[in-house]
Every structure is written in C-alpha cells, then in structure tokens.
Length: 322
Image 1 (cartoon, rainbow, N blue to C red):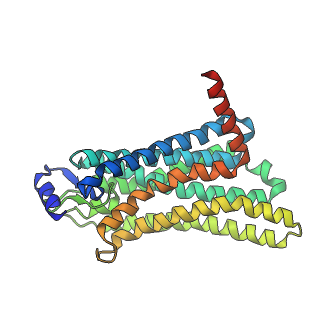
Image 2 (tube, rainbow, N blue to C red):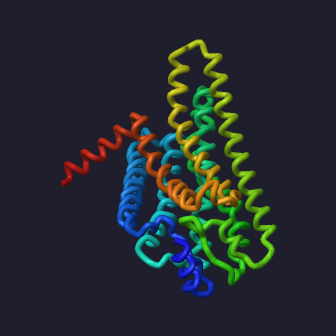
Image 3 (cartoon, rainbow, N blue to C red):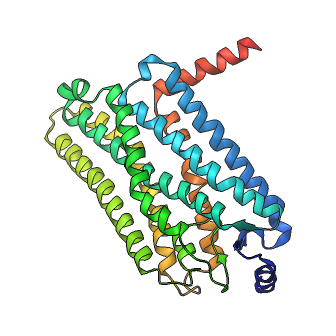
C-alpha cells in the first residue's frame, strides 16, 4: 500500500490531489466493493425517490411531518450522489482529483451534512408541537410553513458554510504530499495540504461544527424532554404509547446520524493511526454516505402506514400501465 501511494504521489500533477482510495486495496476486492457501493447507491436513489413521490402523490401526506421526511430524503439523494459515484470512479481508474473539484465535492458534502442535522431538529420540533401542543399544532405549523422552514434551513446551511468554502478555495497547495486519506474531500484534509498558516481555517471549522451541533442537538434534546415530560403527566396510557411510538423511528435515525457525525468530526483529531487504522477510518467514512441514506426511507416507509399505502398505490398503477 505504501509503495502504491508513493508512486501515485510522484505521478500526481501540480494542482491535483491524490485520493488514496484505500477501498481499492487489495486489488482483488475492487469488483466486490464496486458492486456493493453501486447496489447501495441504486437502493438509495430508488428508496428516497419513492418516498418523495409517495408523499407528493397523496394530498393527505401534505403535512409538516411528511414534508420534513421528503426534505430528508432529497438531502440523502444529494449527499449520496456527491460521494458514492466518486468512490466508484476511484475504484476503476487513477484516483486523482483536481483542487476545484475537491472543493466542490467538499462543499456539497458539508452543506448536506449540516442541513441533515437541522432537518432532524425540525422533525423533533414538529413531534413536540404535535404531541405537547395538539390543539395549536395545525394552526401554528402548517404545510406551507414547513416548506418555508426547509428553504430557510438550506439558506442557513449554505451561509454558515460560505466562509469555509471561501477559505478552502484560497488554500495554496504545497509540494508536500497532496493526499486525501478519506474516500472523499473534506475541509480538514485540504487544510493539511496548505503551505501557509491555516489557523483561521481550523478555528472557523471548529466554530461552525460546534455551533451547528449545539443548535440542532439543543432543539432535539429540548423537544424530547418536553415529550417525555408530557407523556409522564398524561393519564391516558394509549396516548403515551402512541406518542412514544411516533418518536422511536425519529430517535433511531437521530442516533444513527450523530454516531457517524461524531466519528467524522473526531477522526481528523486522532493522529495516532494505530488507534484507529486509516483503512478503518476510510471504511467507516464511506459508510456515512451509505448507511443513513439507504436506511432512512426504509425505516420511515415501513413504520408509516400512510406512506406504505401510497407506495402500494404507485406500484399498482405502474403494474396496471404495463
């Protein structure tokens, strides 16, 4: 592996970056890895597109909760399309990427990651309103407002990352090894290739990460504390069970997302590769772009009767039209 990386570094043209492509080794496993990533990407597109179509098709599903679900699915499509085709390309050819292309990929990956956290926070707030403020829910949080919230979250995520994008695009690559050890470009990998002082870049990255996590997690934790408190006060056991059931799915998705996010944030700070080998980091980073986007539509589709019914109608219509 070291020999291959050394040779690739020597052949990397000026202004280009070498993607280590650790999933390429050993060479005999490349077809299997490519097939796995391709199948997962296809399932991501099919699952999330089906979920969005099911929600759009049924007027009864034009409610805030389902609008946030469709926003989460569309975000999953974007992040998977940004990451997985590049991984498949690197498995088939020389894994060298231009600096502008690396910045563009980093931009989409970071914005979608930030946006997903905010969408999950909006979904938690929606559950809080529906369970704890049922009498005011329909009048306060309408479907139109939910769409506007999704649009505002996209704008906020883009604005928060704008400084990071500018700082990344201004990085001057050194002649030292220009290597991205992960399967996709990210901000910290680019800063490590700079021949200039990148203290501002690192501080900005920390501030944005901490601020976004605190805001999204703060809303989520507050919402669930209120929900649990409200369930404890309720004398109707059936309503308690229903409330908890509606939150289980969302809570599972939250845990899955933040486990990957914590790893993605922390692995750059772990310099000792013997603690977590680079090959393991690369594999786990790849799973971040695979597991949540694939599982989200399955989890929500299977646990939501209205969505299942809409999908069955779409399937019957397709079969009858053949």
